[in-house]
Length: 93
Figure 1 (cartoon, rainbow, N blue to C red):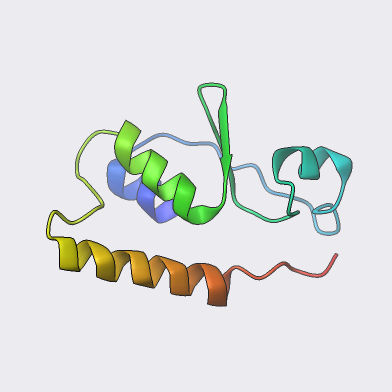
Figure 2 (figure 1 turned 30 degrees about the horizontal axis):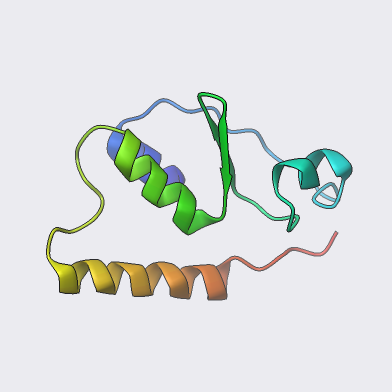
């Protein structure tokens, strides 16, 4: 998510989640699966990396992060799914 914000040149504020607090009521109110990331933008909250990245690509100005070519876009979707499955594990709390 941070790479997308940097690529788009968008200002952002990073709020760290303290170790051991992913399952706290405060955090699970933001993300019901007790994970990160969570994005809050203009009163709109999203969780899950793919949903966040697609939202950012739609609401922030160019450059587009999604290829115009359908095959390239499919490859991007595949890599995002691999990232979500392989790299976004819930850390023990």
